[in-house]
Image 1 (tube, helix red, strand yellow):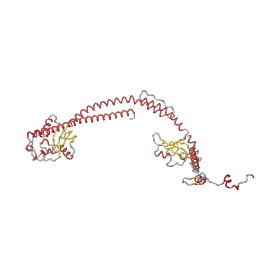
Image 2 (cartoon, rainbow, N blue to C red):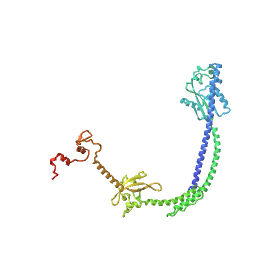
Image 3 (cartoon, one colour):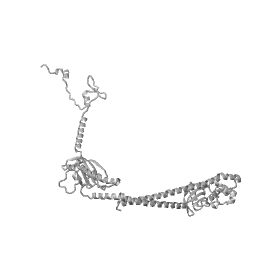
Image 4 (cartoon, helix red, strand yellow):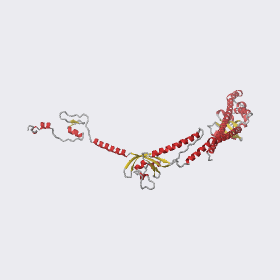
Length: 484
């Protein structure tokens, strides 16, 4: 079973087997359902035929007979619905001897209407379930399997004359059947069943015989199909895939980075496309390897850290910030290479990735060997092996130290400006001032001296003096002699 061709053949054979089994089963189910649908329709028709006969006797024949013989007379041959229906069914059963068309009762006047054990069980079911009027399904009668339908006939007021107190019954009925059987029935009790039963064993045997013929033909057809599939798989698929497999094995066995030889497969199908895809993949692998080397050697600091916090690989941009220790022996831990306040805490990106995060983007402070503090935006993502299992993280570092310094300086400048603005009070709007004494009216309607008002509404302070003009007016004798 190591050959892919054999596995493919087994899978196809298994699929064909399952498909054929489902097809056979589905065919059987559909045919069986169809047969029983037809049987059910036939039973419905027979039961309805029985009910129609009874209704006709009850609605048409019996009223006419009462006109001829009177209300006290009862002739079962023409006036009893069960008698007429049974007579017709007995003639019908001559042509269908396996069918059961019967009026069954647990206490009939006519012994021919005596219910069997199965019918007595149905009568008991109807009496225990007063809301039920009909039952259908598969049932065993006298050891044979039937599909049967039963219609319950319950005691009604119209039935009291013939099935209630014998004293109320027609005299001719009592003379013929006596005063015991069929009487003393309470209202609502099931007094009889209209029964139709169609044998299913013969139908099943005939159905299975026909299905076996069909199944044999289907089995032979699938056997031929399997042989053809085996030949086609071997010629078109297995041989060509074997060539591709050998080529893959040879390419995988190369230990150095030699170019991979292209593979040539004839045809224009999926296997040919597979060979071309292999050739394209070989070229792209070389291109991707070169691209990855360019990305890892970019100006952005990059590093790979394993789950033991060991620095697995880093690019030159990383080592330009955090140089390799000169006397380092053994593996270098990440928190030794680039220490910071979040190391060995739950804020560590590696810890967050291990706990399920798909990506971590954080702002962190790191220190150089010299003790200089740097600020980075660190982006960390999972680093997985070929099986998809987490083995570490890949981190990139964006230096935002200068930006943070500018932000700090900007914040200090804003604080200084705000502090300066808080010290400044401005007077604005219209000021009502007296034209004579120059007092100012405040918002409450009081007049204040101008220096008092300005002092209350600004940071200004006043020192009093006197101008030369006022000095001449107020103190003329104290003015110096300008002529001297």
